[in-house]
Length: 307
Image (cartoon, rainbow, N blue to C red; front, side, top):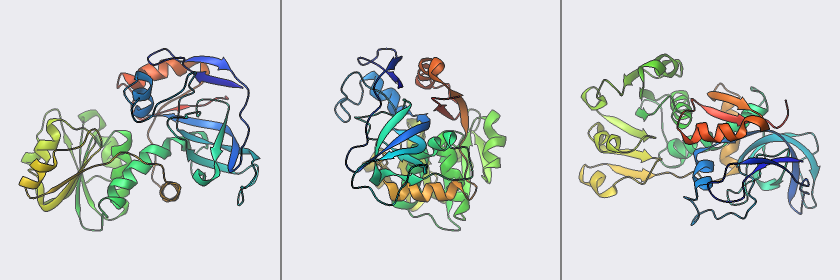
């Protein structure tokens, strides 16, 4: 089978030929329809995550996968060949950027039917992260006021839609060119972060979803109501500073959870969408890595091993 792999940290990924994996005990073999590129893949490639997710070379990157079950290993029940699935692979093992992947059966989730199978790979990390923020760490409810920073980005856009579906009043920061897109997600107000200061316009916010970090975190404390919550994804926020302001600050790093991903797939079938940047094949995958690393992607980049 064809794979995309690299032989050391920071080495350009290249196409290779490898034997297809076998479905071991508790696994299924998946014919890959799509694999989504994530910031984590770039960090692993650069060697930044070596203490958390060490890898063995040659390494086939990618954690977020969609596809069709091709074969079933011993000890697996409840699945059959031909079932369409989405799943998240162990980051240290990778394996999504290939024609086939062995996937633990306990990580399988039935793919949503509302979108093309290849594109549904884009749900996995962004949907899981947004779900962790809104429901695991906060429990958003109808009538609450939520501010989403970076609402045009993949996680921010998904969080905006989930919060709106939950009945929250959602405010967002984004660039002026993305304002219409974010309003289309259901945001009540979109603030141009380049030319406006959100803290001059908002107050009494119950939850701030910070996908941006930096000075935005400190400024966000000013708009939260007493007892409110800030949840950040770039780096852990300053908990002491938040406590002094009378609010709570948390950090979310996405963790694989099939039950959570099942909720995400269900929401996708009820209208929550993924913003796509582009779909690439093997010949363009290395350029896609560079695009993701450079921060140029407007949405999810999906690797599709077959045209």
